[in-house]
Image 1 (cartoon, helix red, strand yellow):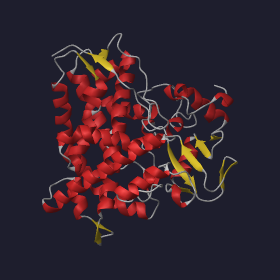
Image 2 (cartoon, helix red, strand yellow; image 1 turned 180 degrees about the vertical axis):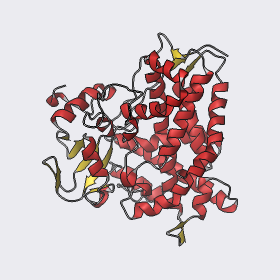
Image 3 (cartoon, one colour; image 1 turned 45 degrees about the horizontal axis):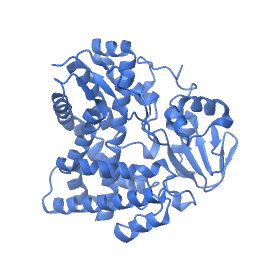
Image 4 (spheres, one colour; image 1 turned 90 degrees about the vertical axis):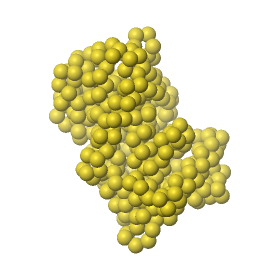
Length: 417
């Protein structure tokens, strides 16, 4: 692909990012999107520099003149008038996206409920049970559409239960989750932004109702933990803080895992030798899962704002400009990964992918996502004999968008129980 022909907002480019990534990595590792103040960073080393330096590259654009995530003033005002005051930036509504030292203070509130080994071991039986119940529902059918029948309900069920939402509310919660993530794609219309705002306020109101119930009758779930937690060991969290933490965790706990599980089955079954290797030796699944995350990163990139004039690779980055850290490109950087376009289940450094990012804003649910993926792959392989792509039904088209990557659908066939 010629550098001048690259259009990262073009649906055709988004369907197959990788020719553009090869060109950017070779010719323009710091690439300014034409007619914008957005600079795309594609090299692995440079992205690590950005995510490890929050003093220079902030996650709070409104503080430094960066592009706000909520782009339309009317939508921002709707949050102020009807919600908890969510504004045009990220810090006041996405508390887990704040810069240090505030970010760490909020992460400390949740990490004990998401990241500890004891929590993951405690949740494992529920993940296994949920996977098996989903498979029980279609094991005799001989064919499924993976996204709707398995890859979506699995992580949604797990995070819904962990947070403490009623499982019967999952259809509505999924609708709010999709709306919450939409602004990261950028360039929304006013109508889209207003729909996001309305659904966002509905989600906030819902979280407050559940939080009020848990204050009266706490249980062993995340929202009960938050209504009793104290910021820096002193004051209780506000409704706004609880809603901000919960909506961030809920979306992060399901969207990307759905995309990754679907990509994993697609990769596994389009190359039968990979599937057969995993059937013969399920101990290869953890490294397989890492390689899936590397080569088909569900979050292709996120944003930072330049705090002060700086440069990367000699390219000036003015204060207030936006840096787009492109994880999907960095995970195919030949300086780090040999033959990066090839899927190598035996790749020794597959776990070095940065699909979960790193630094202060590394994904708090990364370990849970890995657990869900590994159990899902193992159970699907072991319980659905002769698993294969359904002939004539798949077009292998991806969801449109600038940030997330995943197949719209994936039809699979297998020998019924």
